[in-house]
Image 1: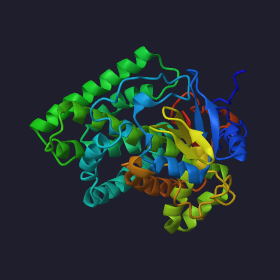
Image 2 (image 1 turned 180 degrees about the vertical axis):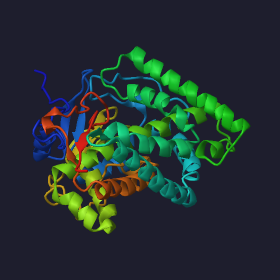
Image 3 (image 1 turned 120 degrees about the vertical axis):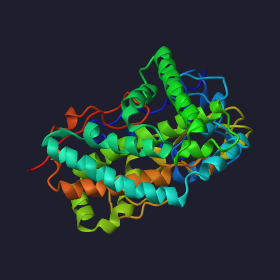
Image 4 (image 1 turned 135 degrees about the vertical axis):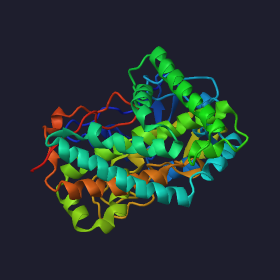
Length: 396
């Protein structure tokens, strides 16, 4: 008789939409590593414990190559094709190492410092626009999406006037209900857009990341796919962290007050929000050889879903993990991953969050939800969790 195993938990508690699906906590109670059934019939694993998640993400015996993975979500089709040249997050060394070394050289301290100053100006401009529009307003459209869009445009050298074009295609790529044809069309449109931009940078370089990379030995195809990866990583995730971070603060009234009273806690507050929300819920690794972990044997070829959300709520590592506390030291969370694949743009995301969230709660001390929590349109249909709209109001 074939033994049945649970599928990936996806159902969230309607009363606690900021929490991971309760199924992860139930799995973790049984141990940090559990069997998991995948939609294509594969039987792999899920990691829910913090210590084990760090171990797997840092272990070279587990591969990030997309063609080796079985997908835990039925809405995401499996592929047996290797990642296209330049899509380094879906590769292993030595290919991954080559691309990452080139990119680290572009994320310089000087560029991050300049961008930090720009984030402050960009945030102030959009807060001015929100205030001018008047209460109530959809904070996603008016504030959370435009700030990272403008920042990534300036980083990559993308004309900000083109933002609606690439934002629309990027959102289509993240839809769990999109057809393969829709995904293919959105990806082709984005590649075409970035490909034209790469050609322009080669001919007329400026002081931006893509122009800097044209001086390397990267091909146009590699540059285009790197641009695609960076655009995807730096746009939707940060926008949703801004929106969900705001929602989390509004759901815990004492937390915005603490942030207003002491701007010096912004760094700790952002790390705690990143831990608490974990909007990119999991990452995948596939065993390249037999590996024994937590007293269990993971066979070569078996896919391991590492639940970042569950690991960030592990009570063995974080005290009272289901409580949001902007005063705690939440360093070491796994929201940006761990090991050689740790998010390349994490410092940029931190800058945006540390500037924008405190500025929002200072500008609008009476900020509140304009609709009941249950009326919010949650992004359960997207690969990155969040809210489609965040209607807020404030006292004039």
